[in-house]
Length: 128
Image 1 (cartoon, rainbow, N blue to C red):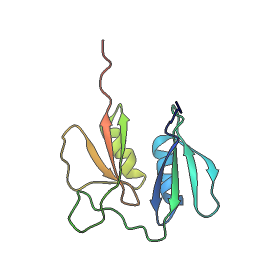
Image 2: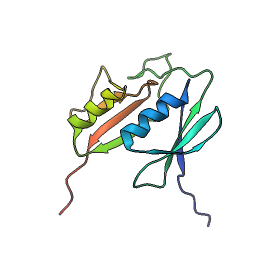
Image 3: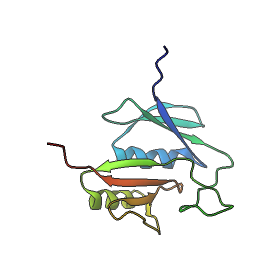
Image 4: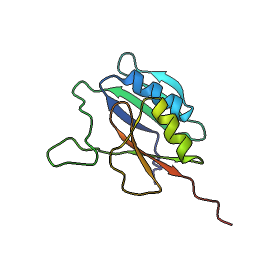
């Protein structure tokens, strides 16, 4: 049986460079490969999964929370943190915005500089 594993997640925007720079700084990543003027691949510490940031000529930011007839998110990133308030502050300093509506008190939904939603989630205490 063939083994299948996740290698990367690709994220579109009108201009990949500022979005890639945002996530490199937020996640302590590193640009591993450039696809000319089309995008980059970013490696993240502690995982083999890469984030690709690509230009999409007709990109329109999703509306979150979803509204009928408007562009909707196709996926979002869940990012775990030991310091939720510190992570929110860092994300805002790097260009993200706190989403205007929050639904789960323990999780903070943010919008990256291109408008993609992502969640900052506290790590759960280790099981003993």
